[in-house]
Length: 541
Ligand code: AMP
Image (cartoon, rainbow, N blue to C red; front, top):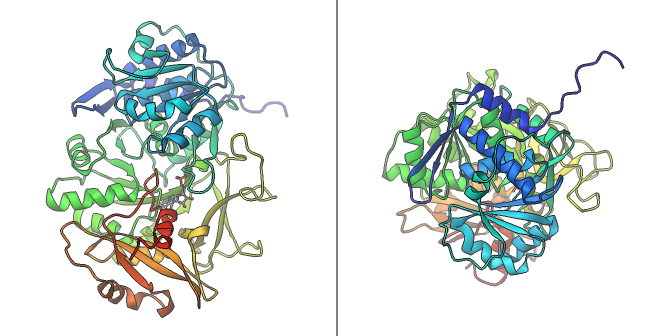
């Protein structure tokens, strides 16, 4: 129809141009490998990004080519988040915690043409390099000139920038162009690639910054602890520049001590990370108190935030915890748990019950829960079903894989593989991954509910519940429990006693096993596949 609005392309370079125009003096601080701080402004970043984009074209990168990044959260990685899409190519973030085999598989599958490597990770990358076929150039940063390497065709990042200039027009001219990709952690089968478009990431940025979501603004100081190789650091490199926030990048310093220091010294207002990070930080702060009350939103996702930890942060440290849920396939943001007006008069304990849920879908994401016969279930806070989603920043297909019903319904909803229930006011609560549910005597038991209850015990640091085979009931729950620092004795009886009143008797774990550590996936989730294998091999006794 005539007379409609402009056909304005929603490309990522628009965010960068806006940041440079509106917030040129805002800073990005990075903790470098040696612990010192690198500081520069958005205006500095802008110039370097332009130069880098141009240099990529000079290296032979063409529209649609995949360019890998193997790096911590730092200013160079931030630059790559814009420079690669600005050159019309696809920024493929590589998970540094994968095995050499998995890493090579992903690079070959994506056909990465160039890979940028953080010098602190060079040795790690070199283990995979002999298996990699597609890469034509490696670009190194945070590495001395005389660094010894087995890699071929190596250039230095700063040389690329120095040898280039800012006279460059962005090549991202169409919002439908691909701009980034990330493979899922792949706990089952081969890792699968989610390919993001300029348009989807632009809309995700607006979605993430809407009121009621993360709403990152010029008043914020943001610390993305969530790695840039995990689901695009939850979009923070884009939402920060869009909002004009100051950024603090932790580099390789993800231990509780430096994080506490950065939060206190930089007066961080938004910090984002997985529960393991915040568990570690909490125990660190118990021993070495610091003032982290500048945080207005401690954003936590990736796995369920234990209710007890939310309560501890809020009641003891004055920190507002914002639980969020998402997936690599969703760019990643799906739901955010901010309290609404009708929660405010509730007693604190009930508010923490709400905060234990993963929250409500943000505008741009639709969700539904579906029962075993494919029927849509009501939002009554009781019934559990498979969570399905749709929206403009959710994949329609995995990269180079056929669409099939294991992940897309015939009516166009993405099957998350999560099982959840939804309250009448739209707050969604994950009860399990489909494959992690415990089915005992025909009844479902939620491992996440049990974990939440066990982790409220003051002597417990982490707990993971898995199903173990049982002759009579088919499956029974087993809890693996890691004691809190300094705890010398922790018994099964103590744990069972602690949670007995919260559950029906048949929910109580048959076994509680105290372990030194709970295995984790490359993105910090409890690795239940490994736990189940340990149990099968008789190692969990
Ligand atoms: P990933 O793509 O690696 O981020 O993994 C996505 C999966 O992580 C989801 O499908 C959930 O199973 C899990 N997940 C993410 N956020 C949460 C959360 N807040 N609570 C529970 N599980 C979560």
